[in-house]
Image (cartoon, rainbow, N blue to C red; front, side, top):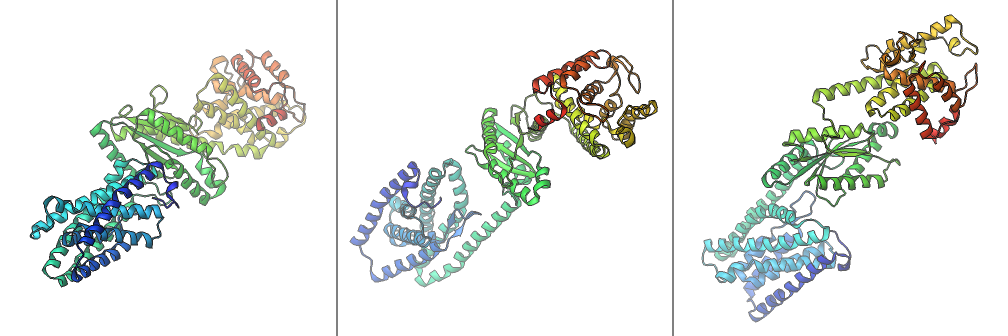
Length: 615
């Protein structure tokens, strides 16, 4: 628990718990004091009690952590509380437990409510340890009886202690009680079991000869060494399963958690959802702001992934890839991911720019029967989300998402890499001629608007947009004097320019990016067959080529050239409509007109359109 200044800052249920524990502990403490007052110890017994109390105090002030984050601790004070109970009675166990706990809290400067609560819990645990004495009498007769008393009393001590402390943490942090109790018992039981035997040994040695208690030094040191060794082992396992940058579980931890979750789901039939998450355009963050900024963004992303009130475990699989295991069905997973995206939309990142993610969700048993299939479905759904514009999530549906085989994914990845390489050639066009470069970018935007009107798939639209950028690539072989000539070209010069579609396609040959190269080769074919280079007509002309031709012609008409002034959009559209069915595909012309009207760009010159697009 954290350390608030006063009880009023605690949740209502925790205040109720603290009050109840204090109310229970008060009569126990009063009863112990009254019992001691009615039967005061002799000098020898008083010195003996003082010795056990001193040993418990020293041990309690120097506990050993049970957890990697030092959230739970244990000390060998338990040995002296339990052995004191066997030797001197339950009243002294309550006193030793309460005073040692109080001293430890004061040394650590805990807030008063927490000090009172922990002291009361320890006193109640010491009282609970007297259960065997209440059931079978105060004085165990032999070593076997002493051991039984120690084990039963130790179990009662641990049960009361863990129950109250787990309740307090549950009420304070708003987490489920059952996992806390299970976790604490798993940590505490082995250590306290060993200490219960040592308590029985201490009582037996003291009964035989008080000086024999010195022999306890070795076993107690061994227990402390065991606790520290166990802690070191857990820390090593944690580090081996933790991503050092984000402190999330790594890919190994993910594999183990997924296997355990699937096993649990198979046992009780509970659903399990897997959400795979990718940071959108993370490479650009590294390139623009540096890798240190990128690392900070990944750490911030990890905090957003875990900042949820819903159950779920987050893992970093590598790079900018994360996974969430959500113990819920599709509806629960949907709520979880919706909350995640709301956090991202409201978050401020250290590099000053928004960060978005894409996510794909699959659920067991609805979408998969085993781990491999669950991962493949979630990965395919993430792939769909990434290629539908990013900054979105999707729960798998066979109606929406197409799953690709490993070979298909590899082929698509290779194809995308070739497309990126081809896109770099756009810079060659820009360097060759400022007009040609700017013109090609505007054509690409017009192509994108046309294909959206025609309802093309996103992947095909992206390919056509790239083809729009590269459609004049072949002009790098045309001399500057021809490209920038202020008057009409001669027939020979026209023939030289007319070779640029074939040259552009030839430059892309070998990159295996069809149909982009095919569209570029035929983007000057005319609907009536009068175009070049192959005189194709009608639907013989590839659809992409027909789109590029209309976008190319429109931008050329509406742009100022050295030999003529630009026409207005309505004049250009009138010209395109006049030649629809002759030079242009009528359907494409209509789609361009609809795009310009929808975007509010009709009637503008190119410069005005560019300004509006930028705005």
